[in-house]
Amino acid sequence: VGMEVGDVESAMWNVSQYMCNSIVAGKALKPLAVDCVTYIEQMQMLKADFTYHMSLPFAQGVLNMIGDADDPLKLSGSAMIEEDFLAMIESSEGQFWSSLHLQIFKSMMCSFFGDFEQGAKLALERGDVYEKKNGSPLAMTDTL
Image (cartoon, rainbow, N blue to C red):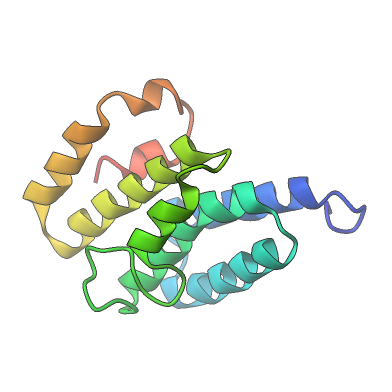
């Protein structure tokens, strides 16, 4: 609806939430991966930088779960390269949220691929971040 009325920002927020909620809801990964890549490309094309930066870890996390990464515990593949992402967001408006999403998806990859020690370490490093991002469906997935 946002795109139909010219409200790109709201449309991109909705898309970002769709990606996050789809993961939590258990949507099939292959169709979700296609959606994520499509939406990430739209965000980039429309210069929706804030939601683009926050959504890249979602997209790469989904891609990792379907095998699009040399190291599934590292968010590097066809959507993003982890080191480049960190450099890109360093001075961005949404640096806190983008880096938080990166940390959350790294933890999810640890759970998904069985590296529980690294996942616990990442969780301890984050500390009580959910006091700042309360109500997020990601809080549910982060406890896997």
